[in-house]
Length: 543
Image (tube, rainbow, N blue to C red):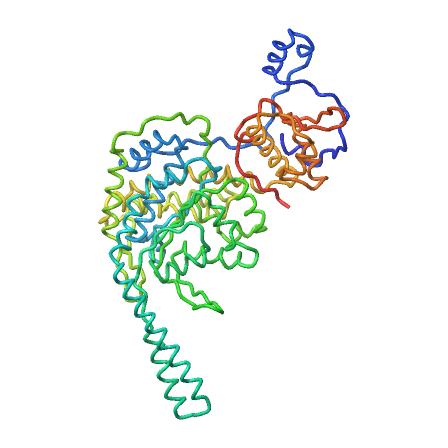
């Protein structure tokens, strides 16, 4: 098992001959040399997993409303993207539409948004952008229509702002000239203050989608542009790994996003720009993050991404790649199921909550009906008990602590999608949401179970995945050892050597000598695979 490798030998340069090659390679060489030398070479042993992994469960597609399920299956049948990824795109779009309509009340005093944070761990090329485009189309059309309707207001505002700016400049210049004349200066100061209060307000222009931006810029947009929006990005590394998550801003911005998930108010104080306050705003997040980028983010925060509750707020999906198995097929004429889904989203958009005089969103409150409340409490208690010592969620208390809240949110999204005028969340919505949440908790166990690993195990998995990708890209199984260290993810000599030792012990690689060069040879059974370790996901080494 993988843990027996901790404290293994740290070899220098191995001095043994290769044990052989895979059976299919033997056959190829036998055909090439007529059954000569190759027939005498032993086959590779079966590679062992470096990290034991939970099996991926199928996404509970039956828990989605019929209209949603049929649309997801229709789009998935065409795009051939992972089913859970397609479903997450549909649910994220539903969350954006629902959060502007209703909050959900779990119990008296326990009220929260219906907004969802979703993160899909997958590599580039899995077609998340295409999935998002299919399901979010009515939302983007709604945003553009509102912008077009307000175009004249924007022109009027820009003219008023230009006039106001000119007046302010004139008043400021006059005040400088009157410096030292107390009576006239006092009058000018009063006039300047009055003009400042008369600054024209920008019209509320719906910006519902953010991609490559910073948490503070999103907060400003929620406060000044439109109080209901979503981060939807197929390259979530731009969000997690960008300037907004630099060392200088990390703590502040993680806290800011946590507050936006809670739906609470927050004031952003700035030295060189206008300070502002976010209140009555709702934010949905649906991003895809490559394993390596997420690994870098988790490591760079030194535990803060977990301890702050940031990652615990996300519903995690960790789909197996479908790349290489996506033979083209013609789309269904007219996408009838997706069209029905779009029609329901448009109905939701017609019932968006009103804005008060300060531009804050005022969604209505959806309580849980009595039977739904009993089911929610029972599920809440089961998850709470699962955090006890020796139970399955003991190492995921942060995730478990947010799970019941997320269940209520998922149920509210399902309820509002089914009937945008609904006054309650019914028991069937809680039951459907519980099936979805059970799946996400399993995904969280799969993912986080491979995050806080010993350094040497994490290093081995990183090198393993790098070799598999290199093999897939080049068609080779042998690589110069110095190149693996120089170009690969682990470059410090002792860590690199120990990681290779673990991979050798697991029969995933072997070190061979060819002339004066040392080579790292990948087990041919792993050549061309999506990732070396069969769990094929990100692993963060614990330092």
